[in-house]
Amino acid sequence: MRILHLVHQYLPEQVGGTELYTHWVTRSLAGHGQDVAIFYRRYATGTGLDYRTDGDRQVWAVWSGQMSPRDRFLATFKESFILDAFCQVLDRFQPELVHIQHLMGLPVSLVDQLRQRNLPYVITLHDYWWVCANAQLVTNYSQQLCDGPKLYLNCARCALARSGQPQLWPALPALIGPLAWRNRLLWRVMHTAHKLIAPSEFMRNWYEAQGIPTDKLQLIPHGLDSPPRRAKQTRKSSSLLRFAYIGGLSWQKGVHVLLDAFKGVDDQAELWVAGDESADPGYVSSLRALASPNVRFLGKLTREAVWDTLYQVDVVVVPSMWYEAFSFIVSEAFAAGVPVVASRLGPLAYRVHDGVDGLLVPPDDSQSLQNALTRFFEEPGLLPKLQAGIGPVRTVEEHAVEIEALYKAILLL
Image (cartoon, rainbow, N blue to C red; front, side):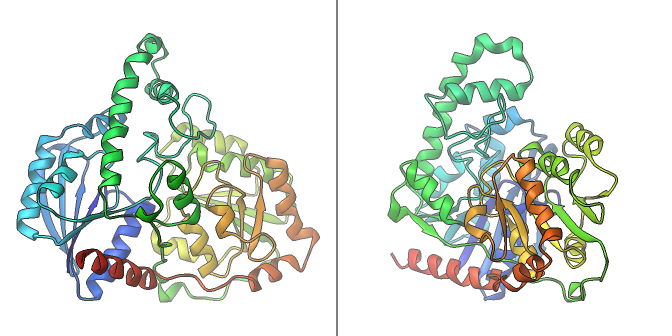
C-alpha cells in the first residue's frame, strides 16, 4: 500500500503528541513493508517545498510564511501555494489512501483535491479542533471547559479574548459567520472521510454526541514507542519520594494546581517539573513564583531524557484541566512502572484506574490533589500496591497492525 500522512506540523521543528504519534506509526508501517510518505507544514519565512527521506519514509515539508493564530484560522479557507505543493506531492507519490492526522493551518481545499481524485482518506481525532477552533474545549475568556459552539457566540468571544484586543468587542457579531463557515467546511471533511479514528472511548463518545454517525467512528487506542534500551535501569534508591510532572507548561495543563498542592506535601519529597519554558514565559514565571524549595524545574527534555527521568521518579502527576485526547505520558509512566495521579476528567478517567495503577482526583482542586499526594506518606503500602497494579502497555506495533488492517479494509471497498 502507498499511504500518505497529512499533518499540520512535524519533527524536528515541532515535538508534541500528534507529531510523535505520526513519527511512530509511519515508521512502524514502513517497517511492515508499506510505502509511506508524510506531508506537513513548516512555519518559515517565504515559500518552498522541501523533500527528504527519513529511513524508509518520504517526507515533504511545505512553508508559506510564519503563522499567527489568526493566520492559522484563515488558512482553513484558502492557501494557494500549499494546495499547489500538495498536488505536486500527490502526483509524485501517487498514494492509494491518505491518513489525515491534523489540518490546523492547512486549507480544506487539500481534502477537496482528494475527493476529485477519488482518493479515500481517514482522520485520526487527536483533539477537538474539528469542532472547537481552540482545539481544547477551554474558553479563552473564562478558562472554563466548554461543551462546544452555542450559536458560535461563545466561539466569537474566545476569538476576541485570544486576540488580546478587548476594544474590538463591537465586532463580535461579525466573527460568527466565519466561525460557522469554518465548522461547516470541517463537518463536510469529517462526514466524507471513510473512518474517523478515536484514540480513546471518551473521544469516540464525545464526537458521537456531536452528531458523527456511530459507524463512522472507530476506536483504535494509541500505542507507545518502546523505551530505549539504555533507559531500562533500576530506579535509584533514595529516602526522598519523587513526584514528576512532564508535559506542556500551559494553564490548561494544571501545573499551577500541582504546585499549589505540593506546598502542603512532606519536605521529604521532591517535585520535578519538566517542560518547554519558552512556550508561555508569563505562565512559567508564575509557576516559579508559586514553587516551594523542593520543586526542581528540568526544562525541556529530549525523548531519551524523558525515559531517564521516569526511571528516577516514584509517581507521575497529570493534573490536567482540559479533556486530554489520550495522554502519552500516562502510557510512558506505566511503561516505566510508575503509578499516575491524574485528574478525573475525560480520557484520563478511563486510562488511570483509581486505587489500582494510580489515583484520580477532581480537576482544579489543589486540596484534593494534596490529599492524594500525602497518601503516599501516610500509607506505606500504597506505592508498591499501585506499582504492582500496572498492566502491560499497548505498543505502537500493536496499534499499527490495527491501522494497517483498517487501510486494507477501506481499499477493498
